[in-house]
Length: 493
Image 1 (cartoon, rainbow, N blue to C red):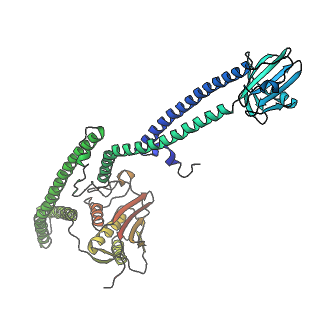
Image 2 (cartoon, one colour):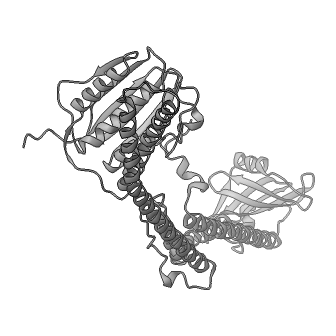
Image 3 (cartoon, rainbow, N blue to C red):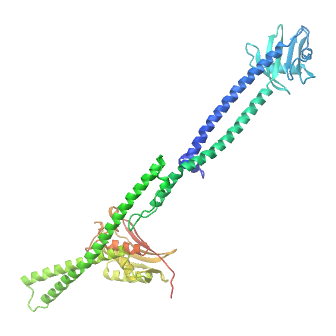
């Protein structure tokens, strides 16, 4: 299970600034902690040696008579406060310790036995440690043997532990304070150092957010000159990005000029071709009419002339359609050709479906529309052309008895028109290019009539000009074209 916020704790999700600060502070903290431990170990060793020296000095000042008692020995006032002495001789075992400068406390026999029993790790030189009830830990030196008598002299280790604790606490507090100051200084330095890099990233993000695929695009964003002129690596990156943006901007400008020239050429060529095509079509119709109304039956050369004129007329009709489509696309690319008004999509879909049903009586046509109007602001004729094109595709590219459903409705602030059929579907290989110009349907859909391959491209251009979207979702047995347009409430005025 991954807890919320766990991803934020992973270093790869941190910013570069955070990773650098954490790395520097962690390294310095590791070094300071190591120094603190080493200092504490060395200090403890020195204090332990000093304590052993004090115990040896205290033992050297002990003069025990064969029948002397520990309290009598300590009463001479030459021992430091806290000194512990246990004596075993022919008079028995006795023990005492210096409570203060004037008081020597005598230990009871149970206390003496407890102390002797708690002495641990006695080495060959007689050194060991013991715990005295009520007094704490002691460093003990044992001299003599249990058979001939012995003395045990000890000094408390509380001063050693207190000194080491105080020093380690001081070192820890200074280390913590130093790390906080270091983190603040490093954060400021790194933030200032990475400011040019953030400027480079912000510039790149603004450029990446711009639509560069089509249209008149100018890239005006640049890394500020002050942050792209440095001799360090970040300044070099900023300068390189500015150079790259200059090249891309020049390329986009050249592309835009080429597109404008191409659109102008297509528009001019289409416009110029309309007149000769209209003349060819008119003369062919006139000649065919003369041949068909002649008294004698068409035979021989006349029959061949009639057949040729019919083919010329068909070709001229097809070329006229192509020229008109190209001219329409060119004008849509230039933002022209649309006349906006209030359009009721519900009535538009009903009319387009009625036309499609008359042309394709071998299909099953279904309308799904509500009683309320669905109003959009747009060009009614062009939107009718879009819906009619979608319905024509469903009729032409599907076999007989295919069920075609046309629906219209409101979804939030959008008007949605869907054309669904249960035909064979669209080949996935061309699904991504279906709205490109001169795109052709694949062989999985029976193609009954010819076409220019511009129908869906024109439909997409019209929808884009209206600020809407046109998409398709197709699998075998289900194909749905979806048209979405910004809706507005019905305004009688």
